[in-house]
Image 1 (cartoon, rainbow, N blue to C red):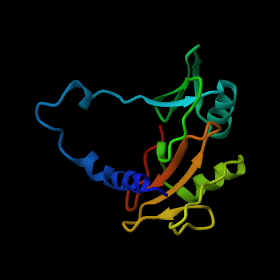
Image 2: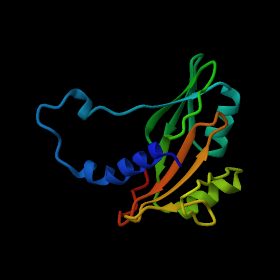
Image 3: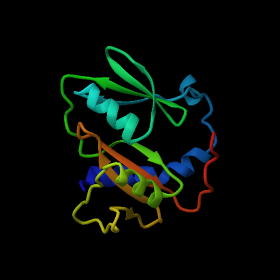
Image 4: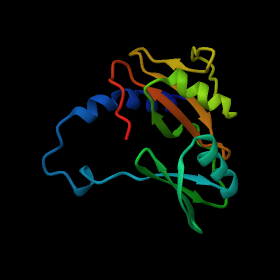
Length: 160
């Protein structure tokens, strides 16, 4: 994995502490606004099958410029673009309660997990960070790097 990927992991491992921090005084409207995730595709039909059927996200709408999915209560816009330049870092990830179960479930749907030189990964492709955070990476049909992350010592999230 590139150094940039390691930086992303360092940021990911800090997210639980950041989420628990007090909001900044004088923050903008963005401190309480919902975030929208974006990822690109050059092939809307293939992306639709992957995000809907493989990942199990609910397709909310098909627009000329994007496919819109519900990703755990957040909007994911898969933007239709002429080409998707390859990113060597994670562009979209999911926090999961049980990474082994999530990885196994995706593997049964044909998802192949990435392996990186210099990272000790288990049979599923899961890497464990020094703080116990567990991460597995995979790609969508356009080559976008996606990930699953399980943070240590966190209670399972409530199901909607």
